[in-house]
Length: 640
Ligand SMILES: Cc1cc2nc3c(=O)[nH]c(=O)nc-3n(C[C@H](O)[C@H](O)[C@H](O)COP(=O)(O)OP(=O)(O)OC[C@H]3O[C@@H](n4cnc5c(N)ncnc54)[C@H](O)[C@@H]3O)c2cc1C
Image 1 (cartoon, rainbow, N blue to C red):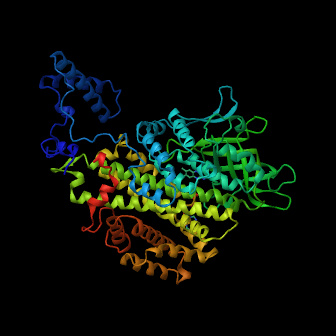
Image 2 (image 1 turned 180 degrees about the vertical axis):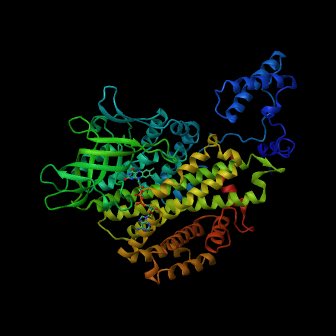
Image 3 (image 1 turned 135 degrees about the vertical axis):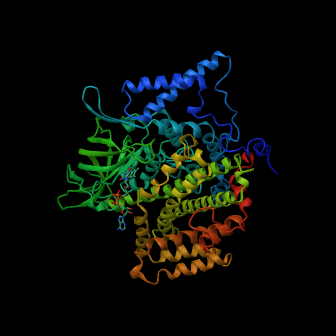
């Protein structure tokens, strides 16, 4: 049965109209014959004035002149010349929807993974984000990019970045909903899982503000390596108030955090850092230093505090260490943290990413001297978790838009969503989105379990080993799948998807970032090998999780057997790392889907991704797949 909305877009009401019919006439033919002579005369006059450098420009001016002339003459006849056609077969806006409750795989995961208590909160956020902000804040914050002011009008260095108010509204929303702090403040069980649900919901509004929200969330476990600094800063970075002023954080009672590791000569290989930290006293953990050097990427430079890697020049030659660097010094003056310029990025336009120089910036060491990577890795790990959740959020946003659009747009006598080949494309995108969501939420639960084990004094429990390995596997695969997913969803909207107003270009430009940030594809694959090397038992734990679905799907069983064989030849493992990690990821996703998703979703996933009954592009599921069941799960009934 078609819903009334679908029926309204049926042939006779829109579909089947010949291409081009009803379109406004092209400029050249829109002019009444009598006006043609006048138009040529104007064009010649413009051309002879030699103000226009090329023919194209002349032509544009030519058309404009003609339209004005034509409009005036028709208006004089009492007509409405702009009413050349009626608008039809266009899609109603996707708004006023609960972005949490309508995300069925996410709702199910929240309940299953033990965080059902967050449901009403998540739903409130979902309704909020699914309303006006989704439409406007993200757009405005991206269209009005941050602006760097290095100096004030008198020539004093200020190093401030000015944002559009919409950016601050997004940040305030994120902080007030505790996206940056829930697990560190909540007494409820499975708070990481709960936060993941909130984060995945909010990031469908706009992904740019994820960066400072995530870094503020992720800094906490690294800070705890230096208890007196944690005592000072943890209450500030976990406060649920947002204050963007660049003033003393203790005065504001809240703080946003960033991180600065990457330098010009190396981002993956941070051990090549050349920034030097000179001890101001005896040096050592918690001591004061002065940092001199540069950072090639430093996002959210208006943050209140940063974790920075630098080579500690201690008397005994300490090496790469981690430092806490506030932007405002204890005496209220500004630290020597100088923003050189903002990056002109592919996407992520709402967020500022900068190059900075540290001209003797004051900082304190976090963790032991020479243990910088080991200290900051806790922050890195938690940002990688958010890369997985954020990529799943982007995919969810993409399938929601694509299914909604095709449910209201007709071509060749049918709604697009009813065209068999489009159904395959949509279903394939939905399967990928669900596989990413289910993996992200399982990973979030691993953080809860690992955290609980750590509090119980364990440091290599099964949950901790699973978390370590699955973070690297999940970051590699989910982030790698996102860009092409966004592109394919964009294409479902046809030309409209390529136009900014649809929001899809923003989604598409954002998609590759999570894969590059905090460990690019190769680095993540190598990180999986590193984790396996450090603890061979982590592979057993990982496979045990997958094998909870053993016997339920033959394609999964075969692929898991193949996966086990991949580790037989360690000599070639590095060159095969991407293949191995990909297999680990799809086996884990397949196992989770077989256990917890409806059969049509799990079957389509296993056939296409594990049984290889699919193609290299989306839209290549086996034709016998239950497209309807898969798509209906994504598209809320109210929007169909
Ligand atoms: C928008 C944006 C914001 C960012 N914000 C921050 C920030 O706030 N703070 C911060 O510190 N950094 C930030 N970064 C930097 C980011 O983390 C680095 O760009 C990333 O870690 C890669 O480092 P790199 O650019 O030096 O590339 P490189 O290290 O030169 O790597 C280039 C390529 O080589 C591959 N590669 C590296 N080593 C190997 C190997 N052994 N084998 C095979 N392949 C390898 C990598 O996977 C990558 O594809 C940001 C980056 C972007 C794009």
